[in-house]
Image 1 (cartoon, one colour):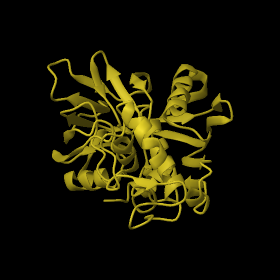
Image 2 (cartoon, rainbow, N blue to C red):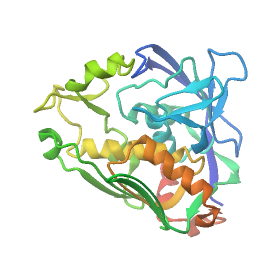
Image 3 (spheres, one colour):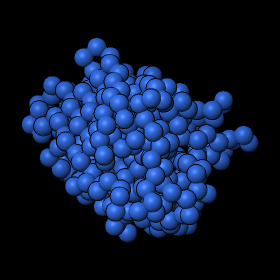
Length: 303
């Protein structure tokens, strides 16, 4: 049986919020089967929890933010991407602020944290959402789409019209039967432009952004001393974001996701459309690993 996964033990890390600039303590803990990824605001009195789900996304400006009543946890997408990439179904995420720490701007620190905790299999089957009919949402020229596919495939195109980005390619095609989240996706960092800094900070955003946790560009070039970590880092980071956004469905997808200039808002609209159109998906479990898509057979070989 392809089983659900949780963490082997609690682990913790400290950082700062990308948008708040405030110190943040993050703790990841094991959670029971079928509980999902649950966020707990340890700085608030109960009830102080929100479960990751498409309907719980209340704000998508510059990040994906979960909310339930007065409980709010922002910038969850990089952590969710790491949890998805390592196949973690159930975890309790404790955070003492309204934002997940940005770390180095990628998912790599969260991957390291999860590996430090270890991964434990549980006694319940892993439950997939298998897309059985196409679903698409649009906003002008932008779109995000899910189509049937026995596995998980991702096609993402960006269009920023900047010299540094033009040189690196603005499209990625990934099939997780061959692609390693750890080796090819996890280290891709978020990015931004110097021309936007004052405008964002006037809105209370990007207060903690710096060259330590983002790729920063002026009108012509990359300002980070070390340059890029990989040639397609810009487009790959957008793919990383999309993986995290899609995992807010609450279960892993069997589907082909394709998008053009999509962001957190459009990704969430896509998940909400899928949830509402029950004819377009079904739950799927696998009694034998050999029956599962190659993407998850590959994932289950990782330790």
